[in-house]
Amino acid sequence: MSTGFLQSTSDLITCLLQTPPADLLGLALVRQSTSPPGAWFPNDAPLEQVKQAAVEFLDYGNRCREAAHKLTALRPVPLSVSCLEFGL
Image (cartoon, rainbow, N blue to C red; front, top):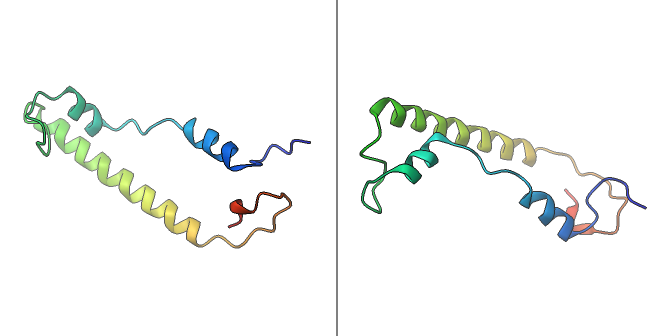
C-alpha cells in the first residue's frame, strides 16, 4: 500500500536527485567566463552583472540558512512507517 510518502532511503535519494539545481546568474557567468582557471569571478563579465550575481548569491545563501534554521525548530513527528531514518 502506497501512502504517497517516502518509504525508503532509495525513495529519498530519488526524490532529491529530481530536485533541479539552483539556476544562479553567478554560476552561469563562471561557466561562460574566459577568465583563467581558479579566478574568483569572471573578469570578462560586465560589472553590473557581477553585482547582480553577488546579490543573488547572498540572497540564496540567506534563504538556505533561513530554511535550515526552520528545520531545526521542527517538532518530532510520530512515524507510522517502518523506515526509521526519516524521523525528525
